[in-house]
Image 1 (spheres, rainbow, N blue to C red):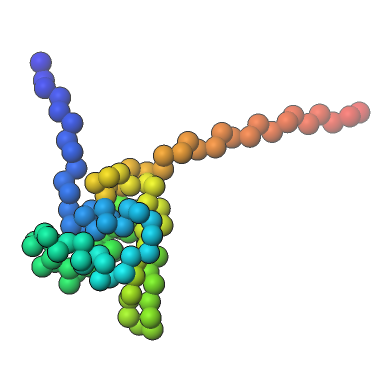
Image 2: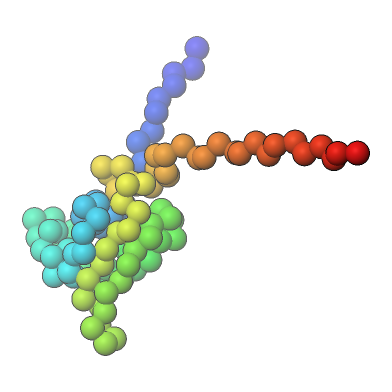
Length: 110
């Protein structure tokens, strides 16, 4: 008898950044960096913030709005935050797809 275990996904750095953005509000780069002040590993990786945002878009189907001042990025906003779980992993849409609309049959009159 084989033992079945459910694996929890590994929390990667881009998932931790997604956790910070889960409120759906606009967060400045400084606020994102400040949220990792207690985590020495993540604090040292904050120079790669733009790469983590790219990873959220690429691997987790995240829609991220980037707010700029000229060429400088000032803030980020996760638009589809409802499609992520509390660990910052993409789970997909929670709403059911719309049922197809039945087309009425048309009969030709003679």
